[in-house]
Length: 376
View 1 (cartoon, one colour):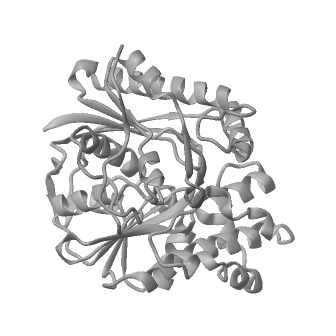
View 2: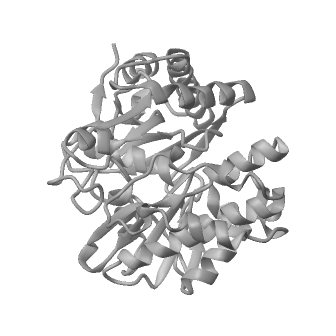
């Protein structure tokens, strides 16, 4: 068993999650806490973005629309990439200091970077962040650019975390059929069937539309606890129209770019009704994932920022009508599950093991991924 650090800066662009795990690339060191719970995998840390940094990253998303080749950095993307690299280095350095760890104790860092463009149908996915510069500053090997090889081979490049979800579920003793739902800016699900069979895909929008709506209408970064949505009423006609998008009947594997849907479609509604409509959209889009399941999950575990949205969780329970628990409630980490996953993926990549599969990204065969940067 070795120590690995995972880093995640998601499409919500609130900050950088840092997580430490202990793994040999097959099993995870997880301790049972009894009553169906497990103890946390390892310590975690967080480095928030300032409002000025968030503004730069939002502009980078807009400027990335002009990219036609992966190496292009139009507009402010060069500046944003330098920010991402520097901020991730600061996050790891602060984490190591807080935990009393030496860089030499860490086998590898899994660095996701910041997604600014994801168009697998066009053979392109771009996560900004300089992995080599990060490895040189930290003095630790870094595995980065984890989506590109899969997309180049015809896969969706997303979701990447299902193989970690399966390892965590097995280590925790959870039985199939099980669904693990991550609600970040975009929502994705891992369906785990008998004998560890995987099916994974993006279900639709997650927090992104709700966050963008709240920022435009109130200046706040999110609908705290879903309280604004809970005071509103969904617009039935708009909701029905949104759910007619062909993405929802498309067979998986499938993935979304953050900007496929726009919060501005709810522009004529009140703040409360708009939040209610977009929250209902996320919940109902997620519920439609069951249409693609070979075995209907008897339990859902929800992670990501959406797990803290009480109104969204209420709607998910209403539409799915099975046992639903947050990752925190079972001893996992709602906030840091993806960072933990990228630590695990980095260890797999170091060993040349597969990280994507035909039933998770649609790639033709199981394949490894990522680029290894060594210090120096």
